[in-house]
Image (tube, rainbow, N blue to C red; front, top):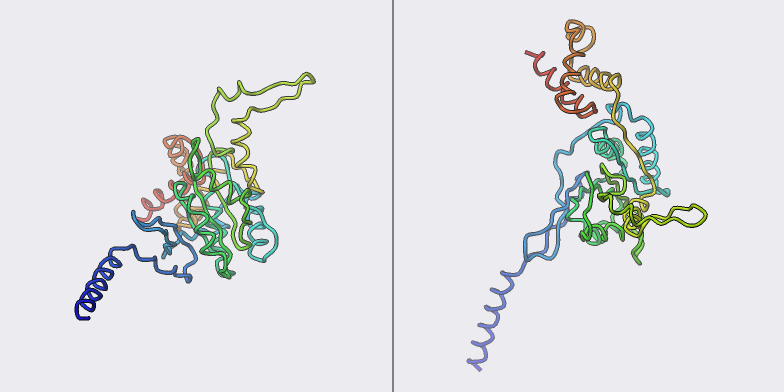
Length: 294
């Protein structure tokens, strides 16, 4: 009997040591946050975790100029979503620095008090979408999964995971989740010259894209709402510069009026950066306002 008790005690000690080596389940998310970043767990852990972003980038929609139509469309879609009405996943594509990501952050700023939440997911972590969906499916908040600067190469695992989450899995998407993605590519994948050779022509003149092209289009078309962004002309670029200079405390009646050459400096700044965009205008205004505030 004593030998059996000794054996049981040793087994319990051994099990306790083994349990200490096993990965611990992640702590539940802090649902008080309005924005999260999905983090994959260290090697050996089964689950990822939603990391709250303590200081999200708060952008006002009113500060985004030159994208009025795109702004109205994404605001309308998001309002439908948080009201529990039908809404679409959104793909924002086009020129860099024109406000694609800022629009997504802007709708969070506007609708966070009404229950909207944002989850930023890196392209390499899109394979975790089923896990994220399970985590938020029963929550009362409305979640946007945000994929910024999205593009894929062939056979990436995140590509198929995103297709299934958008439309293609036997399990329907939860009612409280949408996917908003930004990309410089309309079809989210590189388009190569050789793919044009797969195109076929029928006797009556119809053109049929090849299988490779069809596969690439099949992902982007699963987004119900497409928003396109274009490079800014000079007048719009300067107007955005003026807006941000005013925001940073340099109004037209003081510093700007006393410096009539700020237009020239703004244009030179854009020339050095290789293009005119809202991002370049914001960066110029920060630099100029910082120098004029001495």
